[in-house]
Length: 306
Image (cartoon, rainbow, N blue to C red; front, top):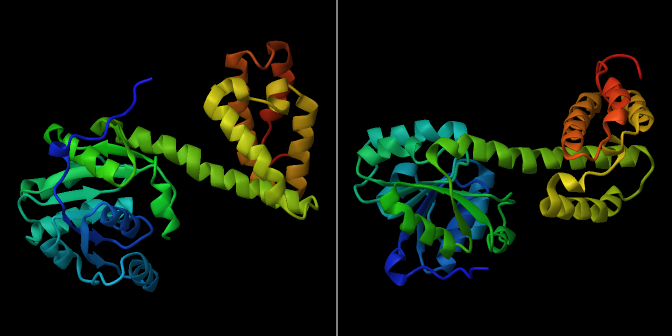
């Protein structure tokens, strides 16, 4: 196995003044991480009271200013706003002359690559897309979580080493993502992480309904083992009634969900169908058992119990 080497000091960015536009859960954390690497946060912008308090906790003594003033003070600007707001923000900053030639402009959107920064590029900025593949709380614990965190990196070829060096300085691991692959990359992360939260929350809700006093303690070891097995073995880790072809058990699940949590039936059926497809393709689900199972799963989510 190849042992990763630290970046060549010649490729390491100079110590930079850092500004944050959008004091959500991500921006102040990344700026705090860069501060630990020797960079200097100099300005942050935020609108809500929550953003202001978060910035004060993670970046004490860093002044809260307008987005234009952030760009005026910083060599490296982190644009950490919601995806849908990013294109308009970049265009607005460029149109008003806030962008300075030679300034590093980095966004943290998973959806977009470097092209969304084209208005800033035309103004002379150096565009970087640095997306941490991590869920954030907006607290100091996130700084530690960046250790070993993968970052989806997209940038012009001539800025690749600088982008990767910044990620490494934050404790992360750069993973190069082609511009045209950014939406697919982001869809994969959303499918795995965001939907996982929904599934776990639903499972906890059902366990409470079933009388379990501490569903988190019950699920913790099970889900930890399932995640570890899935990451290690992929489809070979599939278990449970769908993978076994236990149509009667699955039918009973659907009946109970319709009685106690009708809003979860459609999601259960969709995930069970996807699981059945994968189990069939992998050979875990025997074809002779699949017909009855797929008959149960083909029912109308709003229809009568199977």
